[in-house]
Length: 264
Image 1 (spheres, rainbow, N blue to C red):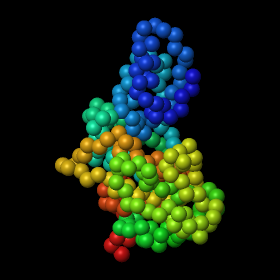
Image 2: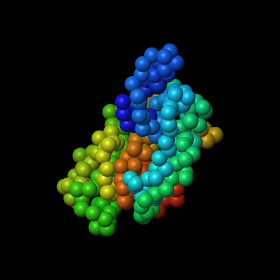
Image 3: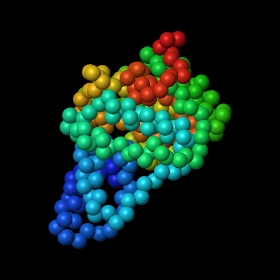
Image 4: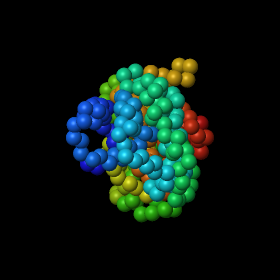
């Protein structure tokens, strides 16, 4: 049995697997691709590590072919910022958080290098509409044709109470993108997962909960949607720009912004 994205399985699967292995019941051979840094569901990292004694071999993949070093490191900065600022009331404790960090990632070798991920802070939707055409034209002109590009909108749409966000008119956003080139897709992180694009823009509309003494307790649902920006940014290979609406946005906190329209 081959399982990809094993970190997205519920902890109950690994707990059941462990029970069957301990009891001597037959379990078909498993090959599991598991990224500890993407663990966002409660207890998964802990239950997965409980299987260590039953693995014939554990191979750590430390050569990254998917994205430039700059994009991959920006993604890791986002994960670290989320882990450092938020702990899940119903899905994480300190043990889970420690297990969700894979130290080998820090020693990863990258096949490609490219531009630094641009980080842009805005304070209202109208400024996103002003900023986006220039970013898209710059990216498409320097790198590739628009069919290989996307705008990924992180908005937690329809999830009332999941996580606060600045509301944006998605139809107007799509119209702005189409005015640049109708072939550029506008997607949510869920729609983009499993896809890869050469370049594009992440528009992060989440406002992120404030932290108290450097840490804030959030629900599983909140944490899952806050990880949407990480999923979005990791879709790009060569060039990425990140637009956010708060200084609490994970990549804004983790890096020095290249431009702030809220100060323009």
